Length: 171
Image 1 (cartoon, rainbow, N blue to C red):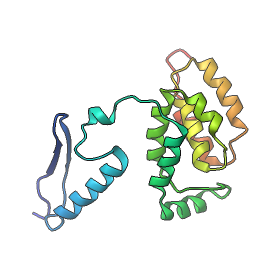
Image 2 (image 1 turned 30 degrees about the horizontal axis):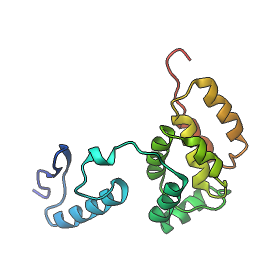
Image 3 (image 1 turned 135 degrees about the horizontal axis):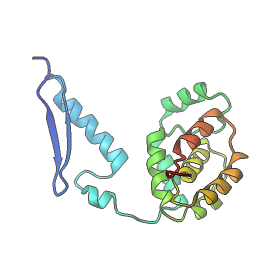
Image 4 (image 1 turned 30 degrees about the vertical axis):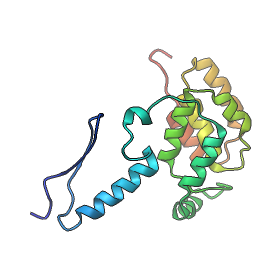
């Protein structure tokens, strides 16, 4: 059989389990790439998901650090071709931005909005995602959206903002 049954990686205290089938010849390559992915996107291996999920106040400095640590040159080139008038683009992948936006939407996102310069594509995208994810009344989110519409300058920001916007039943 070309594939092993599964590799299970466990992180103590949390029951965080990752199962996948991988070729027999490459198990260490897979473990190395998974470890790099997890460290980059979730924190330091060995920390429990409880620690990683702890609520803490996010700041604009956290966003700047996220941009510095997650810039991908190939993705920057790709997204530049895909979105013609993207403007200044750091090349940070959307899932990373979504995680940040969800955390920020639960905190003091007004401070984040104030510090945004709207120079980076990623800043605009995160602002749109925060509006969609914010746990606010629909009327307040719609007012925020009205102000944000002026900043939408490409299809990607428009589509991602629209996809993040969820409504409660009956709204």
